[in-house]
Image (cartoon, rainbow, N blue to C red; front, top):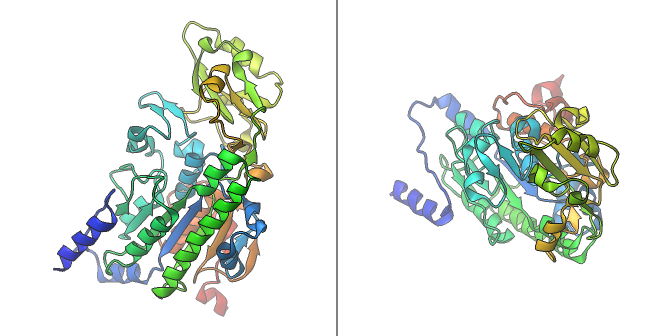
Length: 427
């Protein structure tokens, strides 16, 4: 009956993807005890929640978590400050140039083209296996994992999915996403996940569609915070609120990009002479056989209005970008508030062009992201300094009691937000 109940619950709560794994008979009692003693960790992303949005006073639930936990001045995204590259940086500790997800749109010599709308590419683990996400390492350490939407979680990475996961569906409401997390936490001991992720996207969508200073963004902040309140209430009802470590963050910020702030790249170079990889804030081009790509590079690497262009070998070192084979040979970065596009693209997408954008220089103040942490491992009521988002990975590995993979993150940068270890506190 127990097994039947488990299967029934799985079918109800994980129609998009679910796995049940009975406790392995070879697992030592000591290891099982350690797993059961590990506080659950819930990683929450509010896509596009710029660090200063919280100052608008529209997020009382987040403000309460910040006031009673750790609130960083900001968290710096990795370059480029785009959604998929940064979500993967957070769970791998590797900057996009090292984790392989170098853009939302990219080309791999063997795999072809990747884009957010290409479901077969998004779910293909070969795109993601240049890095090891935390759920794979947690699984190897006997911990159960669950992802309520997270870039990469739909793919079979190094032979592993999270134990429980959902294919992304934008129609699933914020409240339904919260309810799924609570349902997973209601699973019997031995099936209950220890590492969970939750993803909200309304703030990002509103920012793209209406700009960061719009009433639509303000409403999205309210709606997302209401879902956070539902989550907190649900945790309290289950007696988990004081027992679970919660990290709430964003992947990047958002900047206003008026429609007229468009750089028409086809007015500068003949588009038939290059392979167009991506347009937008970060545009990329590869050579096309039979054309003089060197001449195109020489022209675009000269000072341009509202953008900077580099051969991938000459990208400024502070961006940590350009070594990966998936980075195009020529990269052009728009100034904040601008986009790189073509006359044809503008005509085809008339009325559907974002007036809020991200992907810019990751040091720009408008690209900085939210970071709040709350739970038994964290100090209470402290303001923390800014830090790069790759530092979150070794922090989470520490909270889960697992050895992190090699990463670009530094645990020492964020260790100060944790309560002192009992032994250290006694000294």
